[in-house]
Image (cartoon, rainbow, N blue to C red; front, side):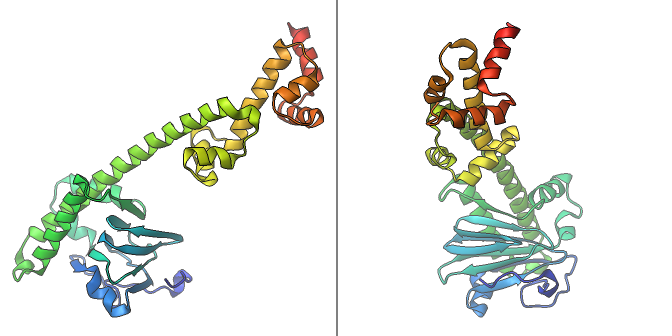
Amino acid sequence: MAKTRRKAAIPSFALYGETPAAPVDLLHVEAIQSRSRLYQWEIDVHTHRSLHQILWVDSGPANIALDEERVRCEGPVAVIVPPGVVHGFSFSRDTDGQVFTFAPHAMIEGDVPATGQALHDLFGRARVLRFEPGSAAMRRIAGLFADLADEFASPDAGGSPVPLWLGRAIIWRLAQQSDRQSRNAARGGRDQFTRFLLLVENHHREHWPIARYADRLGLSPERLNRLAKAETGQSALEIVHARLTREACRRLTYIAAPISNLAFELGFDDPAYFCRFFKRRTGHNPRDYRRMVSEGA
């Protein structure tokens, strides 16, 4: 896929390769193959100034550019492209699906508020919604896209309200799916963070690197750090160090053993390094901390 260029140089179309004019009542549906075949399955980066677009990849591979994000995926996925987002696609000869492009006025005019809210929620940001192959949600969306394509191609489509109804149904269903996936991701993130805390509790004295925690959780270190930041405002390493510091404070308070022994028990090979670590975390060296606690008692 061509590299994203400066936005000033990125073309804007109503439909890719055609006039940039965007009729307010535009509703257009076409197979991925019908246009991408003309460009050797490479749709270069471009924008739609006032149009919304949903790319439904029913099956096959796709490389997707959404502003600065790059996604490689296999169908079934729905790609949500709000107005003004720089986007481009690279397909294979086997990629199958539909491209649904529309002006928002056509979709919400005269309708109940549900469609307007769904449109707002769904197109709040560019994203890729993934579906489990063969799932009920996937079959429902695929069926709506197939019906929309058939209705749009029918001889009486110009006077039929059915494409508009089906388009609204697609927007509403995808908005519901997006909300469901967001809630599941948040719930899954909390579950993974809880598992991380349990791992820290069991292994903080072994001084595992963050990459090892991430590997045990099936995450990348970057994803684990984002998860930790979202839950606590701290990095994963800060959480591990905080737990190690609490354990050091507990032992200095309740265990009358040489500080060097405590350092080894806490997994530090060098007592001097433990002292530096503890002072950096608490502002006191271990000996002074023990004395302060004792005098305070």
